[in-house]
Image (cartoon, rainbow, N blue to C red; front, side):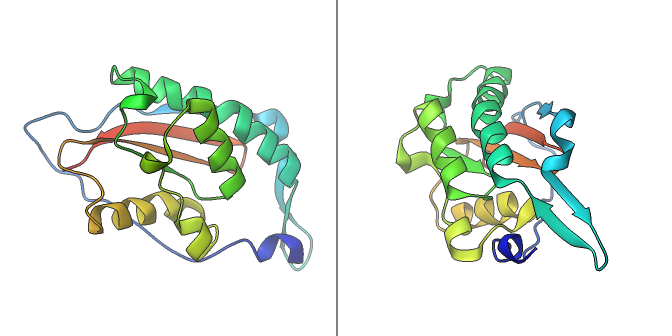
Length: 163
């Protein structure tokens, strides 16, 4: 629908993972809420995306902080120890709410891409991580929380060490 289409951008990202002397990739933690599958649908002819933004916002702001804490716990750190937080850039208000719940300082939050590019869907995390790396905002060994969420309502979080 026209009210949803204007929120999306276009982008792609990938990562090359190789051997390292120090463990750098934490375990992935997952979450989902299939009961809300109707919050984001594709239907009609021609095919159209329809989104219940309020339901998605409510789910994201109540579920994602716990997921982020669990991802940090997997590697034995607290969210306050993160060098950077790189969330899916769907909506700046969602990011701000998660940051507030985690009590993270603004200095570790990477939330520029949604402002510059819109919601680039699954590409938003690798695009933001690339920008973070290119601008030298993290150092080798810094721990970064990657947090993505999307259709279904599903989410995943993982702490990685910067190479």
